[in-house]
Length: 165
Image (cartoon, rainbow, N blue to C red; front, side, top):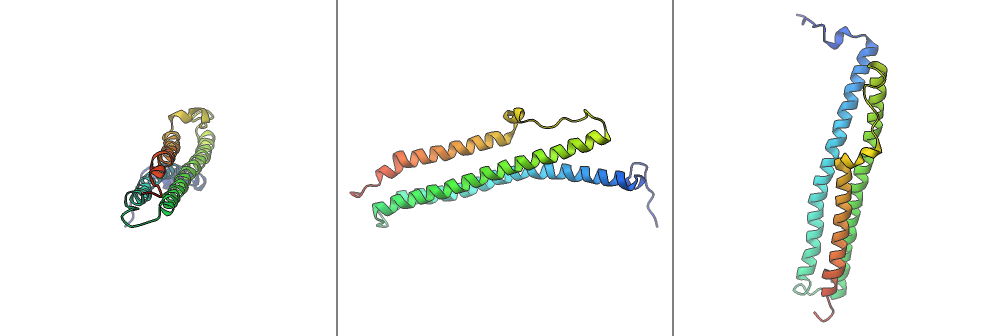
C-alpha cells in the first residue's frame, strides 16, 4: 500500500529545492540548539560554582577544627578561587563561542532566505543590538559574580584566617 502525497509534501519539490529546505531546517535547528546550549552552560555554572565555592566555605569554616595551618587554609581558599575563576572563564568563553556560531548560522540563514524569498526578507544581526541579548547579561553577570567573590574572599575571608587562630 502506498500513501497518498499531498501537494505540500517535500516530495513535490525538486531535489535542489528539497536540499534548500532541509538546509534551512538544519540552520533553524542549530540556532535553537545554540540558544539552549547557553542555558545549559548557565545551569552547569550554577551547579559547579555552588560546589566549588562550598568547598571554599568549608575550608574557611573548619580550618581550626581539622587543624589545618592558617597558611594552608589561605592557600586552599585561593586555590578554590582560581578554580572558580577557571570555571567562570570557561562558561563565558562558551557563551561567546555560541554567540559567534549563532552569528554565522544567522548569516547563512539570511543569505538562503535572500536568494529564495527576496533581498530584504530578513536582516543580518548587528552587534548594536547586543543590549537585547540574554547572553550579554549572562556574561556581565558572570564577570560581576567573579569580581564579588574575589573581593569578598580577599577582603573579608582570608584576612580572618590568622596564624594566631
